[in-house]
Length: 212
Image: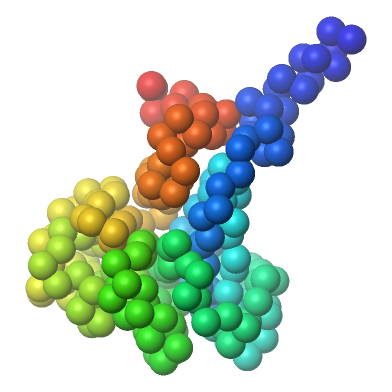
């Protein structure tokens, strides 16, 4: 009995027993295009789902399968035309190239982002996507934002922070692959609460990594 109890405790601390974490009504759509950066998509998806958030992965290609920048094939939950995204609490964009460029080339993605922004709802983008997607759409005008170094030249109407994660109102931006964890925990804090985010971070040993 002691061994079983110990194993259950370890599973919980590792974040596997997500059924013990109260669910939230928050709904997130993650837009995936061929060439997306692997960890910038999958780490936030993992963290948010551990925290009880409903995360729907969306293919912006003609198939449900999307290939990452490093050749990993992902089977998405839906294709783009299977939702109108009006029920989204958050629309999220991973970076990577040509993933970010492919997202910007998708008219439906751009329209969904503009509608989300106009409604005052949450948008998150990381790496190249703040500069390649959000900036040209005017979503970062007058905002503080970060992105992958070298892409900040596109943030002509935003204040570039160079931080790992920047939050300005309903817009959250991340710098690059190394920012994927703090970016994900920030989004979980926004969508659920800080206590849940801290609990997940502790269970995944992120706080140990950061010496906290």
